[in-house]
Amino acid sequence: MPSTPQSHHSAPTIVIGAGPHGLAAAALLRRSGAPTVILERSERVGASWAQRYDHLRPHTTPGASKFPGLPAPRQAGPWVSRDDYV
Image (tube, rainbow, N blue to C red; front, side, top):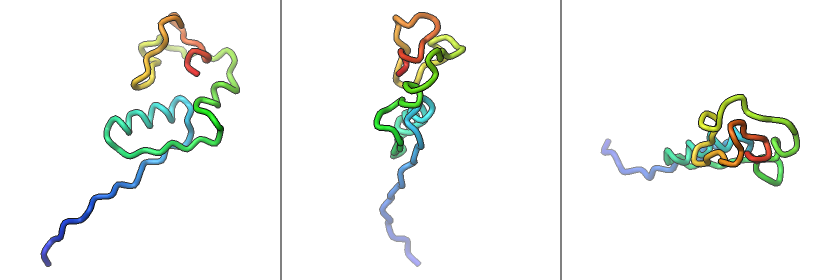
């Protein structure tokens, strides 16, 4: 049977949650060219951090805590706060 060209349709990767890990995963997926959709139950990105964890600070320095494509704010100092990330 002769092969016929097929159109290549890729279903998007669905990322559940627009919190820090969901955004990082989606950024890396998009960077690799994968169609990506982020689903978030809240009305804004990062809402899970904005609503909780008043004193949250990652336990690593900004260089190790940065998100793909989003550098940590310089004014944040060595321990980036929740508000600086949000």
